[in-house]
Amino acid sequence: MKKKINISIIGTGLMGLQHIKAILKSKKANLHSIVDITDNAKKLSNKYRIPIYSNASSLLKSKQLDAVIVATPNKLHEKHTISFLKKKIPVLLEKPISDNIKSAKKIIISSKKNKTPLLIGYHRRHNEIISKVKTIIRSGKLGNIVSANVLCWLFKHKEYFKESWRTSRGGGPLSINLVHDIDMICYLLGSITYVQAFTTNKTRKYKVEDTATVNLIFDSGALCTLNISDTIVAPWSYELTAGENPAYPVTNQSAYMIGGTKGSIQFPNLKYWFYKKERSWWNKIFLKSDIKKKDDNTLVNQIDHFSDVVLKKAKPKVNGNDGLNSLKIFAAITKSAKNGKKIKI
Image 1 (cartoon, rainbow, N blue to C red):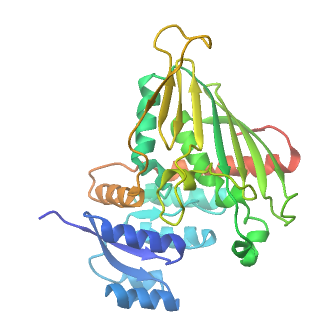
Image 2: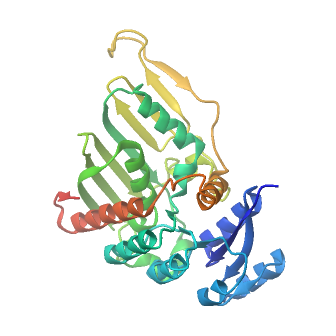
Image 3: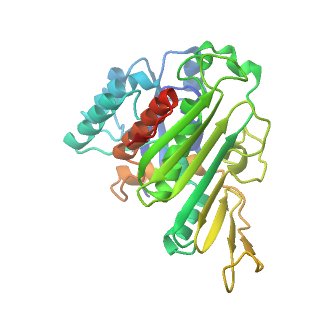
């Protein structure tokens, strides 16, 4: 019988709960315990009949622990993650890797020093749809990538903003929603050379932005525009189109469009556009659609991958350097949004 990896969840907030559900569905992992002090965590401990610990130090004294998922607030990532890496316990760290670049580098150094795997929780890379898109781009079917357009338009209800931190710095759509899109577009198109960003809070009038546009220039020369707003009634955002999370009704629309000299692709509804003969806007353009509309096992796929990494059957699909890269890009976007200038990565 194949061994199941025993995983503990550090922090049982929104993502911690999602990871618990994913582990329970996984055939490769087992829910070892949880670390939290909330009343809800105690209820989870009773519900799933698993140990609960008040802190990471207590968990480290437990037995049969193979790996952990750190899903605590960003400012605690360094402290919690390094405490496990020092004990050579592999870590899946929720995004972003940290709240600052210096801290992120310390986490990466600890992983290397202790020769222990560090994975970052950009779970979209584990979606089968994204794997197909990556394969199509690598195959050359799109030719040379020229440009891309990413939309993240959604409308957040007033109840969402009762949490006061969501109306101040770090609570806007750039910090909350865009981080996944940054990682995704880099995964698909490669490294970024320059960024330029513009923001506004004209609609909600909070201290934090409600709408932003970000222009990217890749090392390859390709261009990309990321357009994000939490004030627009629209069906075009990854959460509403991918079907990964049942909390969001699926719109069956696209949020990403990537265009090249031989063809274009839109997804998550996976439509590939191309010419059969001469490439010309005067000729009929053909469409090939993929019948698979969604992948709602993305978080389970991530847990399975994490288990394979722990067993040394695979290398991390999203490592610490990927997390650091996203953090650097986000820092450049934030800087550019203040001065409107093009920032080199």
